Length: 267
Image (cartoon, rainbow, N blue to C red):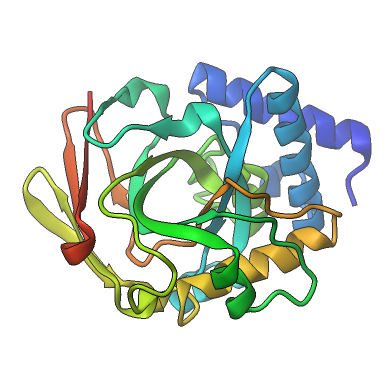
C-alpha cells in the first residue's frame, strides 16, 4: 500500500490538475501497485484539502452502479466520491465549460436525507425512511487524470477514477421533488437531449435494481471509516445512462416525464 507522504503528494497533484485544467498521467501507470484502498485514501486526502480550503461537503455521489459499467472496469461493486458546495449549479443556468477538462453529463436521481443514515447493515427500507425527498439530477463528470495515456494507449482503471473523486465535478438539481413512497422509483425514466437531439435514455431500475440500494451500499461502505450520511445531504444515487460529452455551446435537457425536466448550457 502507498505510504502517507505519497498519498498526500498524489492528492496535491490532482488538486493542481483541477485548478490548471491539465490532467495528470494515469496513477495506475505512475504507481502500478496502487490498490482500491490506496485510491480511496488519496480521495480522502484530497477531500480533506478541499475542506481545509473552506469548501463545504454537501453530500456524496455513487458511480459505476450498472452491471455493464462494472464489467467494463473489472469490478463487482460501485464507487463513490464527495460533493462540495461549489459543484452545485442552478437548473437552467449557464455552466462555464472552461472550468472543466473533459466534461460529460449523466442523469440520475438524488436522495435528500431528512435524518442521519449510518451502516453497517443499512437496508433499502432504512434509506427510504431517512429520505426527505427524491429529485431529478444531472451529474457533471470530469477527469483530472488522463483518460488515455498518449505513449501506451492505456486507459484509466478503477484506481484512477476513485482517486479522482470518482470523476465527480458538478451537479444540477431540478424538476419535481417526490416523497420516497410517492412513485415507484425503479420505473422513473429520463431522456437526455443535447442540442435538441435525444442522445441517451434510461430507467432508474438499471441502478442496482433500485436507486436506493446504492445509497444503502454507500452508508455501509462509509461505516468502515466511521462516517455516516448526514441529514440534509444530497446523495446522487448513480446514473442510468451512458455519459454524454459536453462542449462549449452545448445545451442539455433531461426530461423525466411526470417528474419534470432539467436544463443547462455549457458556455
